[in-house]
Image (cartoon, rainbow, N blue to C red; front, side, top):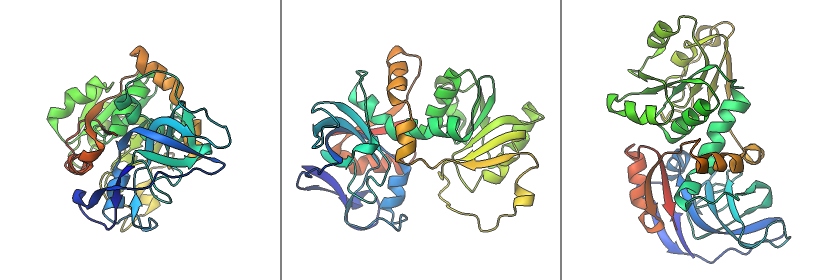
Length: 322
């Protein structure tokens, strides 16, 4: 099989297309013939050598969709359309950047709704992260006001679409004024231009603060995002688009306003299996949930796909077809 393999940290060109043996699944695992996979920021961090637990060489990629090739214990039927994500995929064991991937049966969902592979390929990690952040961590309720910090990211756009479909008012941030239509097309009601600080702008619109905040930029903006939430509101730290994993200094008494809750979302296999992918696939097919696929590449174009991600040029989820 063809696979994109990382032997040493580096730029996009560090991903090498090679021929590898097709994995042989054992009991409790399933062999998937990969049809598509999404490209994710966490894979960029792995490629750069910022995931210290990843042993190289490694076929990276934390998600994949495709058809079941073999399921030794009969959990799945050959030909089932399935999705998988997280649970060590592309980190502890070889991942989705290949024509076949072998994963534990406990992190695989069957998708019965027929959708194009590029749409299915965009779904697993993006929808898990968006859905889990909104409903498990933020406990989002109909009618609430949600601020998405990092609104033009693929997860941010998906979260906006899901929250809007749930009956919420959505604010989304961007650093670029020309991204306003992109945000609004995904369900954002109010665009907030991010100059490094948005709390004064948000408080000008909502003096008591918004109900919920989804933080996708990370530690570089979290303190400011905390100032956007009302007393009794919740801020969920999910992404590190800003590229910094931790604070140099953090004083909780100064950073966290009284009465504001701070939580995180870091989904694993259990959270992936809780994500209603089939239900959301149905909503996508019916046109009730809009997912924005930014650019589509082939496996042999993996280096260019990573260059586009590095340059933030996708305007939606990047998907590779095998």
